[in-house]
Amino acid sequence: MNVDDVMPMTRRVVVGVDGSEPSKRALRWAAYLAQSMHASIEAVIAWNLGAAAYAPYPSNWDPADDARITIDHTLDSVFGAQHHPADLKVTVLEGYPPKVLLDVSADADMLVIGSRGHGGFAGLLLGSVSAACTEHATCPVLVTHGTTPEPPNTGHSPAQLVAPASPGHQSTDRGTRHDH
Amino acid sequence: MTTEPNTPRIVVGVDGSDQSKQALRWAARIATAENARIDAVAAWDFPSTLGWNALPLGYSPRLDIEKSLTDAVDEVFGPQRPTDMQLITREGNAAHVLLMYSQGAIMIVLGSRGHGGFAGMMMGSVSAEVAEYATCSALIMHGNAPATAIAA
Image 1: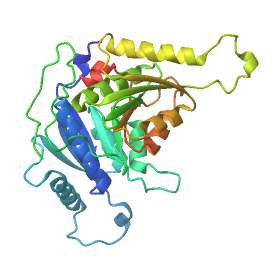
Image 2 (image 1 turned 30 degrees about the vertical axis):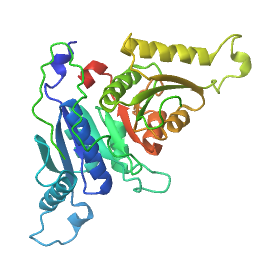
Image 3 (image 1 turned 120 degrees about the vertical axis):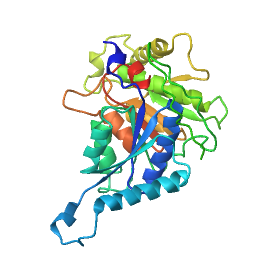
């Protein structure tokens, strides 16, 4: 089988964002790797009503709006409000977070998630979202931990990491580099 | 370690499977960008379910694993093996060995399942344990796609 028949022509790194510090670290790693791979980034936040679905809530409360605000704040805090990566895509979806991330990353080149490290119960260190994603993803998954070092050399533009193209693969450098 | 202690280091778990070869390719790309060096690590253990008597004379899992590691590295890189790459074999539980070598590394890369596991077991115990307990980033390979497709 010719891999070019099945590979999307543009590379894409998906990163799960929930506003937490681990998700900020995951974003920095995603940005670093996406830049190195000449890939676009898709930052994904999932929301669901959970228990609130069964409780009265103010009619002017829009959880999708809340999620959008959370992810925007997180992106501003990581990249600076004026310096989002050029082809960053922000996706806000309703659903169970692991399912949303697995769906969105189904044809991605990489999924990056921060492990909360303190969800679940003693002994279960990997958060349930990252554990589910690590187990069921179809693309490579990068799990960052609280103890994970920051991505190397984030102070400058790395951009040396050019994955060798498969035969016939079109270069798709679409200006993903950015300074931060 | 023989090289400078401050050189960024990437650890790759290699068991000879296709996923572990993908892991080597990914590690090489990231290492190139970061001037990091790579430790390709393979662990071996005497099969615990067999008694010593079941092992033929001259059977050496260490030599087997060294050959498997060298073959995998040669298949992936050929004559262009990354500089400063170390091939390491060590006796012990694979997850424990990998976690030990990943201390102080910037990333550990390994396949989700490798040769072990069975249909229905989505993720191998080694990658699950490493993803959970690593102190650095853990990059877990998935699927059966050729590495060129994943990394291209």
